[in-house]
Length: 299
Image 1 (cartoon, one colour):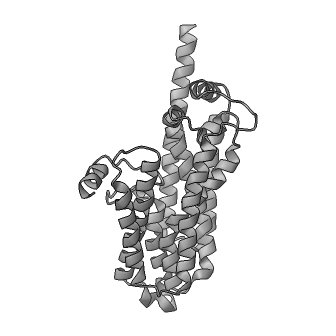
Image 2 (cartoon, rainbow, N blue to C red):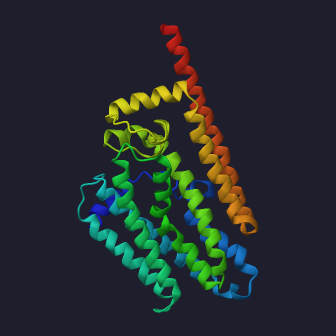
Image 3 (cartoon, rainbow, N blue to C red):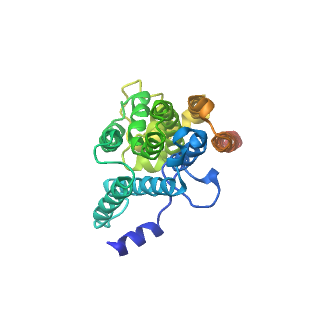
């Protein structure tokens, strides 16, 4: 199992919003890994701030990362991205490790565990729901997007721990709103890059469904024909521009959800995200212009 896990990690290529890169810069970390630290800074001046010591925050971050690995490994096994079956037991080990670490800080009958289990259950259920929906070309894109927030429910556990420990559970709803908006923005961007790969596997992700017209018509394109139609729609319609606008809207809504709770680090992270999105969108427009002009030259 350890050998298989080491090989799995070596081929680990994280994606925006789901993966994690320890590069030393916040801009390259997923929002859910940074959020507990941001909250620790925001809550530092409160009455219960003494509970949020560095040891506690470090434990929370480690537990959150273990939960990420638990879900990521299971997801890769489910999608057949790896054939190392022993990893299913490695995933269980990471779930147990997260429970062990969090148990040091929350009593057995604490309200924390009820919400923790709910987040875990929502993620496990949503993964299967999204898989079924992506295999159905007629699924409306808006329904699919709403389910993506459920997939990311487990990434709220770290923030939940901070709110519970600081006695600031009244803020948790707002934090969940922020996390949901960031999850949707990241997933749309993920799906945009994965359109071709997902269609080869018979999956119509959100970006594919959106670029085919939002899944509002009962078309039944085979994957290769769907990809051709998507390319045509990108070239000849405004769907591509609208897709990037939707990503931007969710990031802005995420910033509004945090409101006064946004630490300087959180604000810088969101601004960096928006700047990166502009770069990606400009690259998209440049490719589209080149394709259009090359077609005109061929004619």
